Length: 382
Image (cartoon, rainbow, N blue to C red; front, side, top):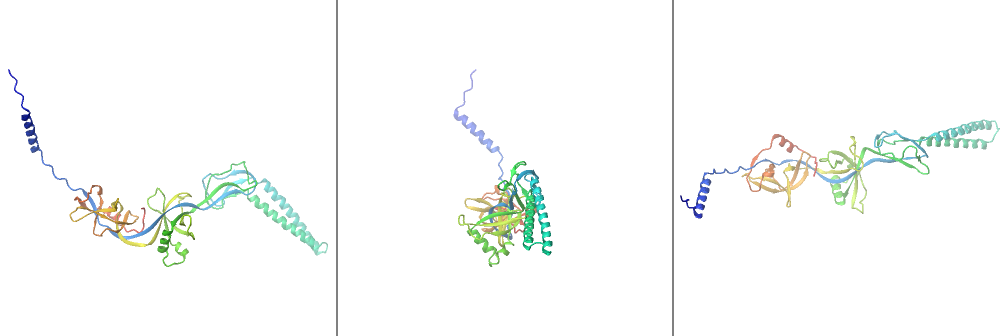
């Protein structure tokens, strides 16, 4: 029996092509993809405060090196290293035996001089001694009084107490060591942290701007400073949640750096701040100005600068370049130019929006609207 002949290549190609055409005809047609959904909202108009930002450092309100003012062996250390201590609290004790005995000796000499002086006064009234002798014993009595006072002071120096409330560092001398021999021996450092200072500098241009906006009428600088709030934030904090006040400005410009030193004071009741901490500093300048505000998350940036995405009447995405103003405390961003009050800003779903492409806009939820449109005159973070 003969096998059937093999089909020619042309016939095989035609068969495969026909099968593909039939399959394509049977495949259902795909429906067009719907435009992405985005949240849109109009900018709100509210008063926004302008600020100038600086960087600064916390420093202690008071700082003192505690020293041994009399020689002797250190007997006790009466605090825990790094603890907060009260004013007048005992911190160190130096051996006092020699000072107690010195006080007794001087007191005995005073008693003797006082008795002899009293006797000489009675004798001069009876013409039994001279006035010069009375004056001599009066002088000796006065010298003895001074020696008693001096020895009493030295005895008091054997107890080192805190001159003010603050945080004390580690003790630098252990009990049993001789201190104060020949020179004052540093025992520890005490720093007052309630209140606390923040020092920062401004350049000449900023200084002139601050002076012009804070004191345009050239009023008494002291009165102006008392009314200038200063806001501070730590490096890991959002915004500037801590408020103090400006209390000092230097009289001249540092010729080496071209800057002027300023200082603000903060209550620090929760003892959050301590010397050496980095501080982000913000000072409000001028009065709040009415401007359009959009959610800060709606603002994007590229090489051309900041911009927002909006939609037109055909729900097509349109870019608008803007000029940014200050931030507000509720997460808004002031816009000083490039935006109209009637513009529809894309506030959510920006990642799905494409320039020139249609989108499906929807209004923001009530909670989002309330958060984004609450009036504010405080700024948080740049």
